[in-house]
Length: 198
Ligand SMILES: Nc1ncnc2c1ncn2[C@@H]1O[C@H](COP(=O)(O)OP(=O)(O)OP(=O)(O)O)[C@@H](O)[C@H]1O
Ligand SMILES: [Mg+2]
Image (cartoon, rainbow, N blue to C red; front, side):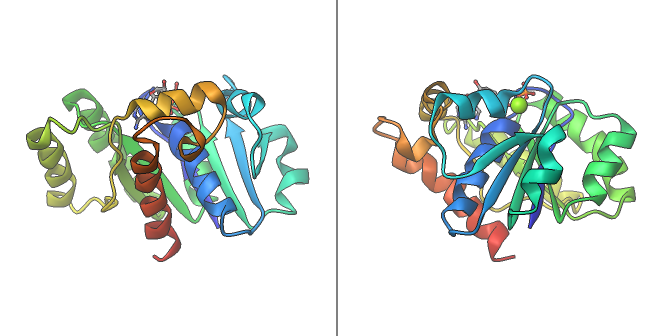
């Protein structure tokens, strides 16, 4: 399966999502490849810090690395232009669009989803970095997508400091010393199952 993670706003959790989905798929024991499509090389530098159960490469090395992979997760840079988005969306089985629940992020996403819709790609919105205390606005964000018939994952990802620790350590959140690491990992594990079983 080829999954691409893209967004029109920076810092919404693309790299964190791509990294943890790669971890999830690698646990199925099928060869998994994480492609870092961001010139900032954030996935690659995350991978450099720790030892990983999946391969990580950049776009230049994709032809060589993809041959062996059953699952390919592609992390991308923010603000893809129309052509980049089209190529990314058409070339994958699923396009994941992470967003936070704040109004600016939602506005940016809703307007650009119109472009994705025309591409007839399979896509789904993922709510990320949710503040558990803001239940009202989290619910409103979900309802906004549902009311417009925009596909959205049942599973969302809360804002938990364990994710920052994991990025610093170069490991997935399940491998970090934090009392909420298990909870944090469970959110991506459930997301992975939702994708895998769809
Ligand atoms: N669920 C979360 N809880 C807490 N912190 C998070 C969570 N998801 C991501 N972060 C943190 O938020 C920051 C941005 O996340 P990330 O790098 O995954 O976003 P991005 O969309 O890839 O950003 P960019 O547009 O710069 O590539 C990082 O410091 C990351 O550790
Ligand atoms: Mg990133």
